[in-house]
Length: 93
Image (cartoon, rainbow, N blue to C red; front, top):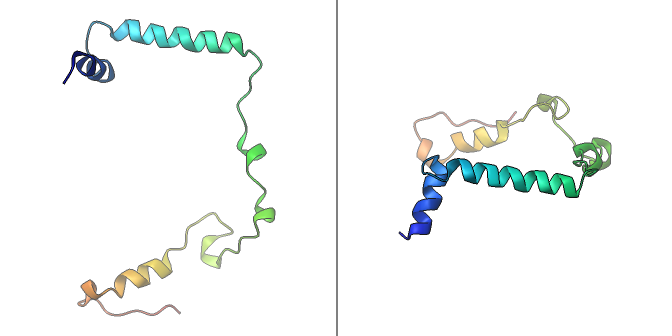
């Protein structure tokens, strides 16, 4: 390992003499960035993602209109694998 790699590992793990200087250097970079772009606002997910009606996704009753995840089919497929011979075979109803 080179000296730079050791220094990098120490800085990541929170060790070494340059710990606080690295922190304050990064803080200075962030402040400069926000000074440069003062009116920059983060994008809201509502602006990026389409509405649920636009996606035309059909949820099952067990999924509660997308609030839950229906894993029954995956569970039944898992139970019916060859490695699960001692478990009773199931079918989706």
